[in-house]
Amino acid sequence: MPVALPTNEEQWLYSPLELLHTPSIRSGWSPSLEVNTRALAVHRLMCLKDVFQTPQIVVNTAATYLHRFYMRESFHQYAWETLASSSFFLASKVEENQRRLKDVVSVSLDLTAGKQPHPPDRAHPVNESRDGFRALRQRVLYYEEVLLRTLCFDLTVRQPYADMLLAVGKIWPGMDKDGIRRIKAVAHSVITDSLSTTTLLVHRANVIAAASIVIACAQLEIPLPGPPGSNSIAAGPAPEEGEEKEEGQDWVEVLEVKVDDVRDAIERMTAVYEVAQDDFVRDEAARDVPMPDAPPSPTSSNAPIPTPFAFPSPQPPPPPPPPSLPTKLEMGLAPPPDSEDSDMAISPGA
Figure 1: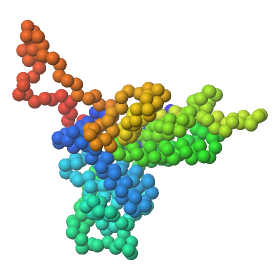
Figure 2 (figure 1 turned 120 degrees about the vertical axis):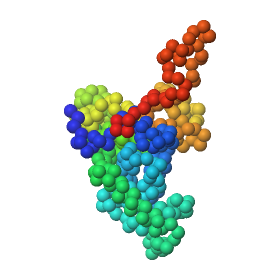
Figure 3 (figure 1 turned 30 degrees about the vertical axis):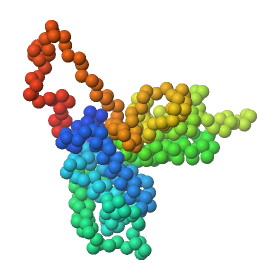
Figure 4 (figure 1 turned 120 degrees about the horizontal axis):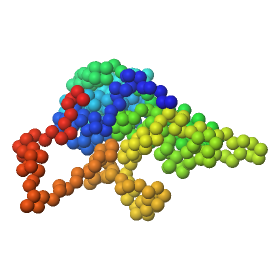
């Protein structure tokens, strides 16, 4: 049976409807603009990681803080560039891989100015007298304080990487080390790529871990194991004569997930990847795994940014009724033209 979530973790899980009514969207932003801006902020975290050579867990924690923050505060009031720097600075301390504040500020200034940042060292000392340094330093400290209050000082983040690594060993106990290494590497990359989406606001870490394993198996063409005794045991070295093959555990039971949740997480996590434009590749993929038309990729220059969940595209308005029939307004079934549209309205406290 799935383990009940502690209260402090439940408060950071949201429904798809709640993702459509964030403070930024309620203040006038479109869902696609918010999705794109969240991705930009996570990209800034990745750039900071590359410069400082911090472990990936720092970025994962910082991205979690950032996504959670903007479920309670607006992009209008708090600039994503500064919040990304504050989130990275805070996460580096929480994950015991701290970086100096002046170093984070200096690199952030370079990134904002479009310059090639260098890790501060003796060859590249921090210039604290440069334009904007002191102002940004004060803003980063202020944003960190606001971030702590908004998160209610709940800084513990359950990492999907840990669930994924533990589950792979249980699911494929008889697989060779190279196969295990490949599954872990691909699943790890999938989890990292999903940080730019809002998947972590909808699903628990074990569901994200399960989705990453399923995607990795599809990429590597490795079958997933079913319940013990089934014919879908994961591929591994063939047992020698007289030797019994060690069976893997059912991945659904190992990770304590529901298949529908994993399927939804997969759709959200794979939304960041660009659909292949080559006809041959697309046709082969459609033949092997028939799928509905994928939404345009966020990386496409001319394509709109899709929302991170299934959201119907706008439909053309219905044709006007025949002249002989009364309209909805005449029948009293529609509000007058000057009335406010309250469709999908939701109170801030909902």
